[in-house]
View 1: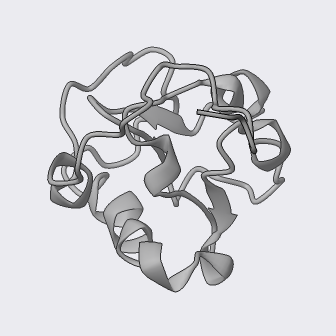
View 2: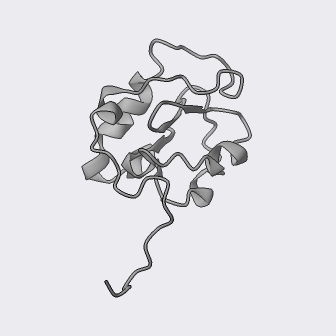
Length: 118
């Protein structure tokens, strides 16, 4: 198995994970990032740097985001293994699970402070 990027990344794409990945296996889609299952070496370097906690080991993805395991695999069926994401840049497409996800309310905004008065 491999690591998977789930729903919290949709419309956020912080990209700190890309900077940490030693094997260049995190690809950019239009609305989310994707980890190539054949290129990921399961090192886990990406997980702790994700500010929205969107990265999970595939066996640990919460049930509510289980479709993202399939999405991270199927996203690469057409692409195959390019052996490196950085040369490709934004692929300007997404898996249907991501493309059909509702827009993230705070995309690009700083996270709200817990307990803030409104």
